[in-house]
Length: 82
Image 1 (cartoon, one colour):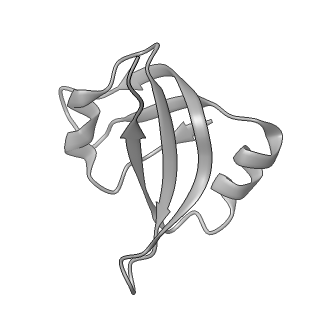
Image 2 (tube, rainbow, N blue to C red):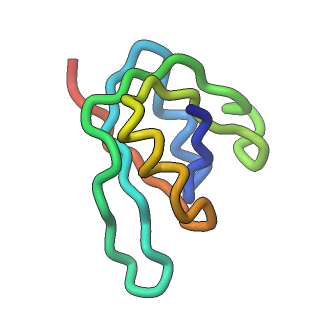
Image 3 (cartoon, rainbow, N blue to C red):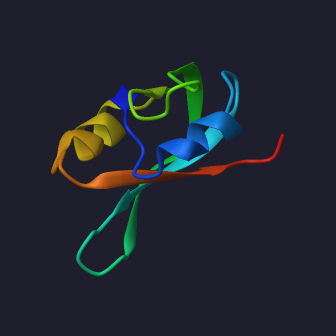
């Protein structure tokens, strides 16, 4: 599933093959809600131009449905070690 990050500068930190946790950011309160745990990064696009870039993540159907809900909210990632 393609995902645009709330902070596109983070694209420079992630590479295909990384595992990430995907969080939905609530712009009103700044809280975050987990969407996916240990999602595989398949592709990073636009790392050289973060305003147009994003991530292609391998998500389960349930995670993809949750990510597609409220698409106006931004996303953040936590890169897992490994």
